[in-house]
View 1 (cartoon, helix red, strand yellow):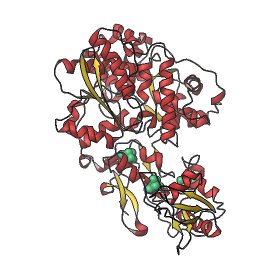
View 2: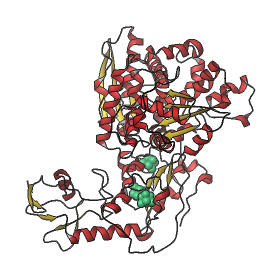
View 3: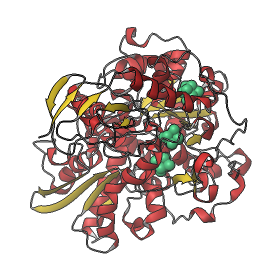
View 4: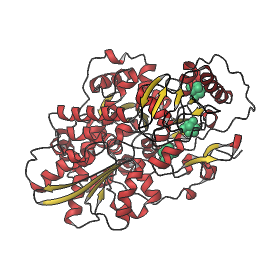
Length: 599
Ligand code: SF4
Ligand code: SF4
Ligand code: SF4
């Protein structure tokens, strides 16, 4: 173990440790903007400078490994001036419009400028060229003017998601981040996961905001605006109001949404239970009819687009069940509209999701089941077309609306979801964590298949944040091999086996984001490993707190089958709750939406 000296103190540090990592372990903060442990080590921002005795120049702590006898200084005038100069150079070409920037509450660049005591930028902008904003994607907006070329986004897209939708193009001062042939994110293989957005230290990547549309709907007396909230949102939205990660604030969230003016506050967990009913029966059907197996879960829209681009051969393995978000929209505008006797055209469904890809999913052309259902019944014209889910807000957007409305979130008293689309079980809560859909489906599949009560509902083998988990489960004599992957680079490992006909599994769960929905691209920033862990604990606690923990025992689910759908996989279920997928090639997409131009 090399002996080193940092700021006059001696330490022993493991070999091959960088100065940055060593300082981190010792509690010495070295500022930086581009480093992401194990993902992005490009050393492009040059902010993490330190002095190393004997070296002619200041060294970048993120790429310099400690050696025996090394003497490091992290806080000298030379170090401070060097860091400051590099930061000023970044700021010189940066638009200073923090007032109107979506990231001004959690922008690392802005915070660092404050922490490093920047009072003015000595250099003027070399050019006034303003790069076009890429608004081609329904989920993510890219403003290259705010980009500091740290390349965290490209590293995450390549290494965590294995998508490579974005990369650095050109050289020198013309370098910028772009998509294949500069066509814009919306015309690329981007799966809309938003993981790049979570790591961007500036406001160069933000979600496509739906806030204004929701305010407009809420102030329209002719509309009946209902909201659905995804499982993972209740484990994270408190962070936006200064609460610790993992604070369980379901009741306060419901109260806040009611204050915003939603007519009914419903729960996507209701439709998660519905998804489980359909998916567990689909699994049983495929097991009894010998395939196609493995069955792969379908509720993560980033993963679905990924499969459509990169694994078209596995599409037949993906469950035809729509995601809980989309099932909710379809039943809200059919079953619920009938139940309360309201014209479905008046219902506006707003969903609050931890996910940016849900914005893309909601506007896939096939997501209009309620319109198709009513078209013949009400003799509707195509011009009256409506979609199942009208607006998708990320957790961050929902919190912003609450702040705009002056809601003192932490002081709200707990309130309950509205019935019947707000009634849910513990099985639906665990959807928010990687392994949760699998666990929820197994709770139901076991009892349906065996006709025996499940004594222990917790399938701990499929829990945890590891990238790939596998388990062999004995369902009363039927051996079921299952696998769970979170993040798309991990999914690839399982998908290669499926594509080559060599998968040993019967059932696979794939979630696009690290940790599952709790680590989604729409979640509060920062979303790091510790926060994911805390949110996961909150989700499992919420499951334990529920009196009903199996989807098929949800009384509201029993009711919807009795009153409306008939039984799982019925003709009406297929019409409203199931969908299809298709092979995608970004080159087939017309250029029409592309607002990015070559410069
Ligand atoms: S990215 Fe940060 S520094 Fe730049 S305008 Fe936005 S808040 Fe300000
Ligand atoms: S949203 Fe996901 S797939 Fe798209 S560019 Fe960002 S990281 Fe890559
Ligand atoms: S878009 Fe954000 S994450 Fe990507 S290089 Fe620019 S500043 Fe870094």
